[in-house]
Amino acid sequence: MARGPRQPYHAAEALALEEAESLIRECREGALELAVTAVGELQREFGAICAGVLAGRPWRAPPLANILKSHAAIHTAEGVFYREICIEACERCGVRVAAVAEREMAARVAALPKLGPPWTADEKLACLAAWEALEGSKHSRCIGT
Image 1: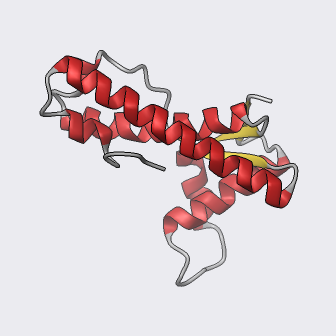
Image 2 (image 1 turned 90 degrees about the vertical axis):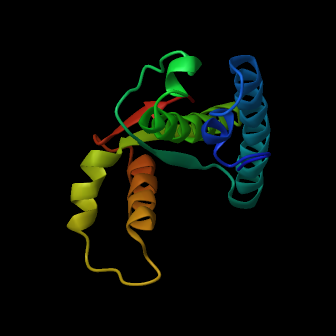
């Protein structure tokens, strides 16, 4: 889901602020375009769909200059960057999106029957988020359409 660097904030870290802002904006536009295309393809293939997006804690992004000074903030910003793109792409395509709290899901994944390879923890979380979106569970917060 990336055009240009897959980790835009990491790539922007060494740039002057104006160049960093431009790079982040270009990466966002490119990633959003790719995501909208992908969601549209899923709609054509499967018809009406909904989406579940694993969400962290709400994060009020500090100014970009502050983000680029902190490696931890860079990682947080990149996670938020792609989650927001997924949500916006779904909204643009008229797909109902459920934001599912990842911390709550981790405990629920642990309670699932043991699923060995090829299932990774991330895949189990994503599967459970999709299930939550489908059932409109109390564990999810509906966003958009």
